[in-house]
Image 1: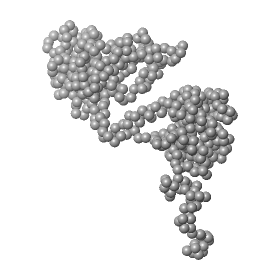
Image 2 (image 1 turned 90 degrees about the vertical axis):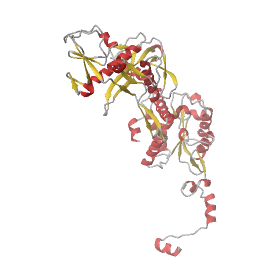
Image 3 (image 1 turned 120 degrees about the horizontal axis):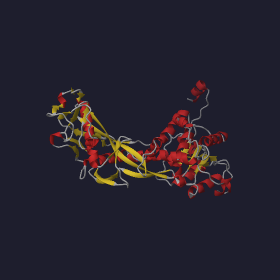
Image 4 (image 1 turned 180 degrees about the vertical axis):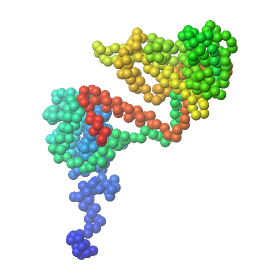
Length: 500
């Protein structure tokens, strides 16, 4: 065998028995073990925070931080991974079952090529972090502090105070460039290719699924409507006849030319022509008296909802063309949720804008906006959307330019559940006192009544959303945005972030 290999390849081969290989791998060649985890199983070597521990291997960029700076540390982790470095981040590592502080110290001593502590006004006082920084700073050239706040050198011991930090509080792009330059000048290897680095960075950003394999009922903002089969058509004395606007608050009608259309009999006092009203079954007519039947029914159902809103105590805003509740103080209204639990919800409230001497207060009122439609089977549906009306504390509408930001301030913490609560609560409030999830908004009497269910259309989905995971993603985005605002810097390079 040796002669054949020597003749064919020119190699001089020496064969080792198993015991000799074992002695070498547990002695002078033990660094080979951790470099080949696909060959050697876990009992061969020690792990800390998901990383292998050896005395000879110093190739890791270690990002150390506290919970307060998790968003920034995660961003820095992704940027350095995308650049090709092998990075370990305290907030992203699998530390379950370990002493986290001891694991960081072990990695810092035996694997870290560079130690990057993230420091801010919230984290600089953490005793464990300060202790780890002091240990790392004792070895010259190992530590590169990353400041997220304008800190003072007097807050650190002599070793740390002598190290020039990367000032992310002044500019994220500039400080990141400084960190990468220091790593290059220090000869830190880039073991990851571009694709691998970007894949690791992306997996750190979306590291948990948002779906659960269990059924969930999904609710909409659409409600079923029962519509009368017949419509009354009343002829006016002439086309110039004037009708009191307040009649629309109690009687739902549509005026087209010289005719008034309604599901209900007309109130007394209208300037009608003599004779009996014309009544017809609208489903048998695509168009009648020059009016398309489906368009007419949509308008009549919508006007019926307007009557119900007036009856419930809503006011009409002519400027915004929407309803609102004129409640001077924040009120909570009882209702029954879709899960049959009785609770409360608010449709009005007060918020503060700006701070200090520039602080002002403003009010908001939720109002219903209705849209009526037909499906393919001819069933009528009402869709409810909530409009956020914004005023000053005296009820005066704000300038149009000031409204979007304040409206966003009100609704920024409202997710699907909060919108559903307000939608269901609004429908039951319109239905009247004592309404529950099985009630109807009824306008009219008997066969001429329009009845709208307050229970929304829903479906049973085979999968569900992990709300807790979704909240963590939202918290991460909010924290990252807050850190960027506090820093007062241009923030991360969004285009480069998307490329990564």
